[in-house]
Length: 299
Image (cartoon, rainbow, N blue to C red; front, side):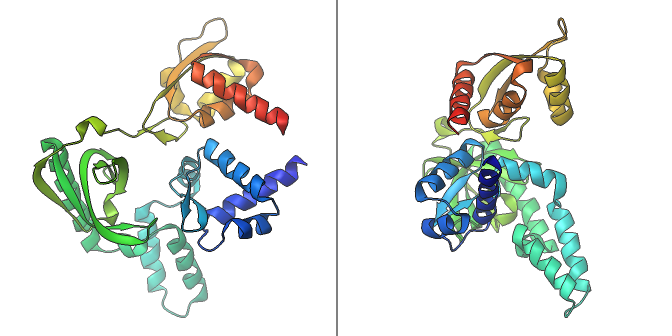
């Protein structure tokens, strides 16, 4: 039954968010699925915008996945709020079981050791200033002592910074050693050293975009459709930023023309209101919808 399948999917998501010990076989046993179905679920989660990666022998979901970003925006604390709460809990004193439990919960989602204290704040200000200089002068830089939660390492990263993001909390960089564009958190840097050497890989720099559905990516994908009254009202209710991409009403319908970073967000919306929407383009989006419909029929 579909409810059983949904329960397995949700159980797998919960396991993957904090997985550091379960390999493929253990995950299959805990969720009650075959290895083949596990890989199908992992691919399904990737299609839905989850960032699934492998750490050692363990499959995990990155907490920077768009779904979690949208969820956390609604129910979680900002880093500043988490710091304040952590300090208040410290004042509650040792031996308080409730305070200790709350601190443990905060540590599961926030790196308070990195965020807390005046010194890290001062470091962040200095790092942002250095990154701004590197971007303005198109120079390479070293992110000194960068702490990576994925690889559990702290090391210097030689990069070409080219875009400050998320209210200067993150920086987009090209890393010559890996040939990849990556996003680094300023709070995880000990300092930033601006070098005299100019960028050498500017042609490889790729900006990171975030669409109204909170999916992020380096590529923008065009979509074009006509919305009926119901779908238009629901779109504006759930995603107010969509108003900027809607044409004036025409015979009760409105045309939505925009770019997205992933078809999954807009695709779920369209498939849920298929009778009230006419998809005009682009070709990639139409192909995505056809594939999703065929997959749902197979289920």
